[in-house]
Image 1 (tube, rainbow, N blue to C red):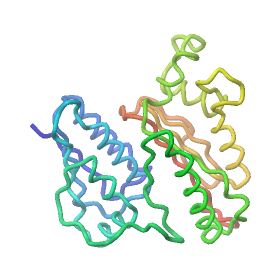
Image 2 (image 1 turned 60 degrees about the horizontal axis):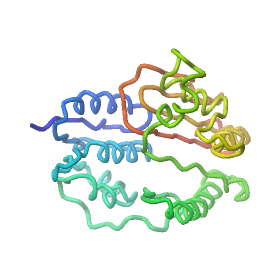
Image 3 (image 1 turned 90 degrees about the vertical axis):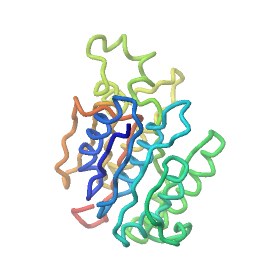
Image 4 (image 1 turned 90 degrees about the horizontal axis):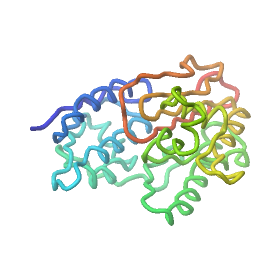
Length: 263
């Protein structure tokens, strides 16, 4: 039996909970999943990466069948997803249905940073170096930032999530309050790390300081909770709990154009 998961027509961080709810409902039975994106009209990088994470999590151990994905039917959407490198990575996670355009991913672009996978520890330095160079060019040209100010960059994974990562060192301290929301508060607000060594795992604290300089926003979703540092130009909610369960962690960072009040 195959369970359907609808991909929102406008797929970004605002509609992500709609997608997460559909995923949680469909995945609980352990059946093969069909992600239906045929009606998609637009997707942000957050939506594309979230869809890839769901595809990775939906693969059933020991099963030769990958989850299914129906590609968008809008030509412009197909082209953008292809240039963003989505289908290049999706081909390893999904059985894709639909005709894809003969467009190469945008390996070099002044306005587009393609989907960039990190598959092993040795990939990290090369990937981060490439992202830093590309992000610097994009932020300097598109957002009017000094290139020297764009060298800090965040990298996220779709692993076990914040609660599981911090549980060995933090759950006793929080006691009955320990939850996905408590884990996110500890990590982002209190600067807690899973490492016991001083100075290790403090990347989020550095990101907060960096974003404060540029009036930026960070939001992290993990498990059933989502936390955000909300700048004055945004109306997001600082903390949400009791959300549909979704694997791994999703990080959103927005830096507004300097001199503008909108991202």
